Length: 215
Ligand SMILES: [Zn+2]
Image (cartoon, rainbow, N blue to C red):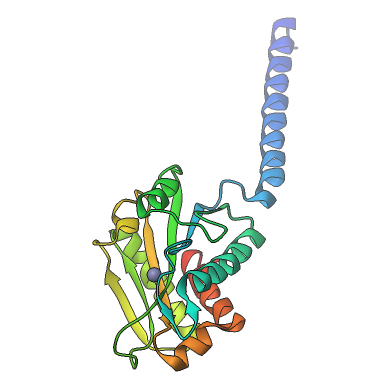
């Protein structure tokens, strides 16, 4: 036969378990609500469309590099936003920013990846292909993933990943940073491809899958 004391102790145990189960249920509910938003799952991607304003970048055959950079950047932004990845653009219009200002935007975010988008040019107009620069070990890993995918999708020459320690946007950026050269506008064949929406979309897709291979 149980005493009153034993009964009240059992009741306390039941209250304890009920409390724990309620807590667990609330936690699961919280996960279910938060997860679709994927709010904290991904790093913020800082997209930096190279050049802008008075700095047009490379200019060949009437094509301005700064405009192509923005087109790829906006396509990349759309891909990331569709997956609820937080995105910050260093510029959204044709304005001039110093390299330090671009790095400073990235340095405002703790958990971020910085991607600077460019198109290339060379005085030897036969030079073609895509290449990606990095300045840290973490940046190198992302650079190699981006490089393999952008070369695969654009089906142009894979010039590989390169050390870009000399680039201010890479060496002044605290988070992992890469600079992608999406093609040579000094080469007439490549320029005409780079200037088209489908090519810019493939370049954006390559960069996107390089940043988040699992998305
Ligand atoms: Zn450039």
